[in-house]
Amino acid sequence: MKRSWLRFYQDVRIGGPAYDDKGDEFVSGRFLKEGVTITSRGCSKNCPYCFVPKREGKIREYPIKDGWVLQDNNILACSELHQRNVFEMLRRQTKQIDFNGGLDPDLLENWHVKEFETLRVRHFWFSCDTPSSIGPLERTADLMSDFKQWQKRCYVLIGFNDESQREAEERLNRIFEMGFLPFAQLYQNDIKTSWSKDWDRLQRKWCRPAAYKSRRSVI
Image (cartoon, rainbow, N blue to C red; front, side, top):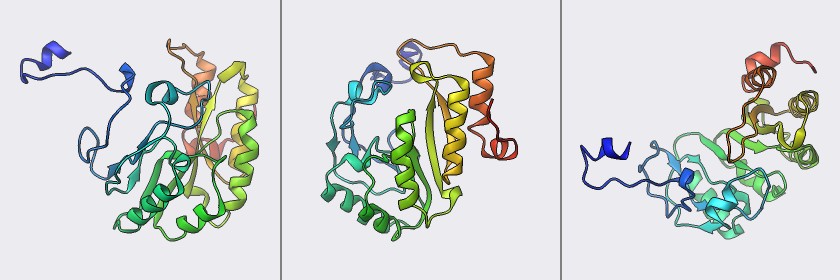
């Protein structure tokens, strides 16, 4: 691929997350579509299923660039001052806000919800990656009860740590019942895992709200 691009450009470099590039300060419009912004990189946690700490290290805060699609890995792990400045920036936007990078239920507090109420939010994205994440998500459901279900979406890692299909679907059903729209993601490690057709069907069903709303069940 590099050789192909060198036919058109003199300076071609290989990098990015797939090469464990830690990333640098975000530049609006470079590589990502208009509206996307990244105000921090890294994560304060060290979850065994996540590549972010290994690739990007601990939280690093950057100058805040305007945008309405927030793509930070864990914005709620940033300092309160940085978070409040991000909310101030989001209030200036004329388009609806998407928290696509994800919001950590372990770190959500009442003051965050008050900030959300000052914004025109299209989608919140939370996470529930293991059975032990259900408790924090239940607390989040209580805090976010004034928002509509279609706004509250949840990344759900399935198949990690020998989780069975039945256990995965029970968790997905529970997340839906709590008022979120789950979006299932099959676990992948450094070496690509080949999942069975049954696992693939389960994942496809639970990343399409129209599909799982019409035929929600446990295996």
